[in-house]
Image (tube, rainbow, N blue to C red; front, side):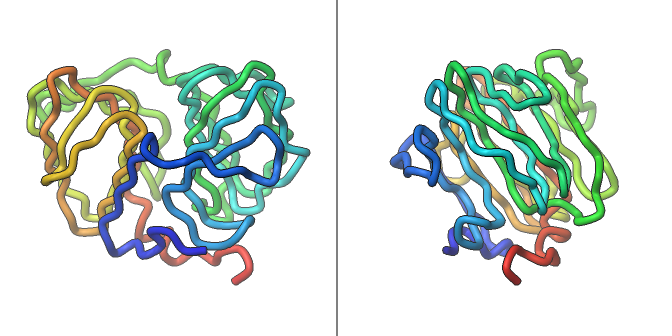
Length: 228
């Protein structure tokens, strides 16, 4: 399956307008945003766990990162309430599920194969920092290394937010609204802009809270994918 697999092209999906699709596990449904592969795939997805649903234990050969959007997500390593950001690097293993129900935004098979950095952070506990070169923007850093920069950005209402993207960028709207070009974005809308592009976003009257990932698209394009 290929969905928005060409990283040289702009891609956008409004997940809250998409149907939930069943996964191989009862009680777990998905809204696919980007995918290259079949059941084992390089993928960007919103996943909803019904109360009591659980995957069997498995190894993330290509790594996994996720942001908990609502509810409490769980595995044998702990409970992750809404706002938790987790990086499980390649070769990590767990048994994920949710006793009470949860929705997560998850990315698979997008790590450097040698990466072994584990991250578990609650975004609400990360201090906001003003971005001095970008008026109206505050940043809550989640993870940064030589390959990528992951953060939450808080955009002030009514602002025009601009950002050069020499290595591309990916954006998931969590709260509020913005427009990029002629397209309106609401919560759970996803936008990916290719390398050497520029974000120009006009923020709505309630402001915007956005998950942002920068610097990774050039690296992602060269990864050996599952089954390749």
